[in-house]
Length: 417
Picture 1 (cartoon, rainbow, N blue to C red):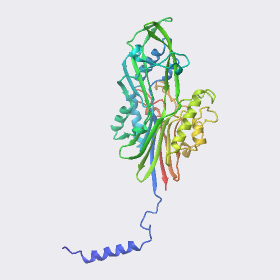
Picture 2: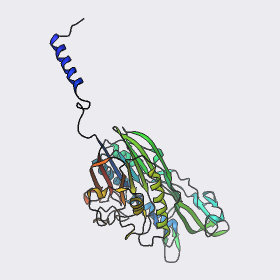
Picture 3: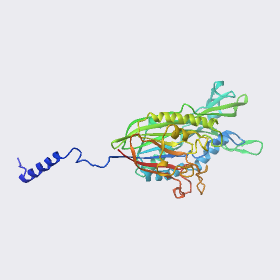
Picture 4: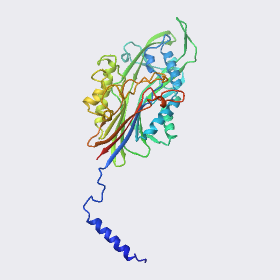
């Protein structure tokens, strides 16, 4: 057997004796142990104003749906996804919370036949008969989630979908027809199709990170939709009421980043109406959803980051009748991360909104409704950086489209432990 040289043996024993004689912790790093998380929240924008169906043109809701479908193609999400992926890549986030992650599908126009209609009980609407269109269009036009994931992967960024934290929200289908209107009558000038729009909120987690827990659900209170229309039946035109619900939801994950666990809560609250009173139905629905979101997020272990599009500004409770911001910061006592690095106010950090076609040459962002809020628990914030994403003309696509009608928001937070 080979013998250890005597000098090496003596030096090794001396070093071991010295280490054993040190006080406990003297060999450890005396600097406070740090924890760090990087998150991004981005509303991808469906690509057109779906509120067109609530105020349809003379030829009715099918014309409005045709226009929506056309504008979505013009606003070119595949190109916008490249611009969004560029913005995300600069942040290198651990977690991404996405809103308006659209799945757009088309199919034969069976909604114009009896087989495509589902009749509902009379008590489901204020003006019976009530009906909804069956949701069976399956030809995918755009899957925003796949398109964005592919764009991120092309940049070497790989994220997994937290499926249980990525709820399917509104899922509606409607016939789309282009008409020529001569001032008194409507003449179809396109073949009818059915257009199906499915809305999702999605949580993406960096592929190498471990998810401890994930959950999500739709809100209990959502926006009811009633649209008076006329159905063509074998017995002639039939006035009827189309009924649906614009459902929204939330998703949450708890994940490990190195040796620290974090909770992230992602949501998209109802739009509200800042031109109406606080008791307007849209504002009441938003308030109910904000209360439910606050209650659900409070069950998650801190440190917690609450991210998303809350459709309510820091003027909530002051100049903004939409209640969500006040509920989350004033009642639920979440910290607005923007205010850690910026003077609290109503005139900066704007995230909403560019025009419907996202082609305005000068930014029209005029309020901050996309947020990153937090419950830091017993961790002390060391450094915090909050950044707007996609809010500069240089961030646009080669054809001049803004990445979204919203600016995204990103935060990097370091904690002392």
